[in-house]
Image 1 (cartoon, rainbow, N blue to C red):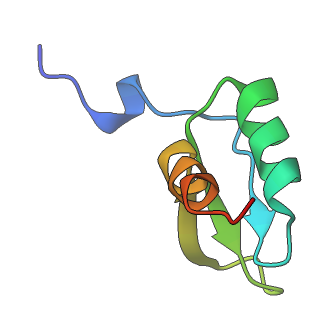
Image 2 (tube, rainbow, N blue to C red; image 1 turned 180 degrees about the horizontal axis):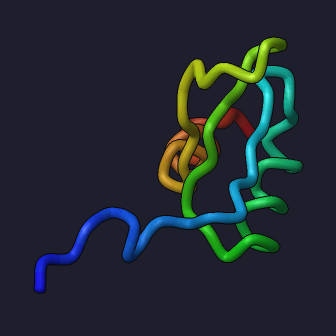
Length: 64
């Protein structure tokens, strides 16, 4: 039996907008038990993705 994306995908999709603060995205990732979220525009079209790794890289280079 071949596995497909349907076998592993998340069906309760959590999304954010480009204006969503990093802290809110981090909370959504933790609460949802997920590692990435789609970023939507005002028309609900996907314009990108942001992942846990993206947030960690940004935090790593943040000035203290």
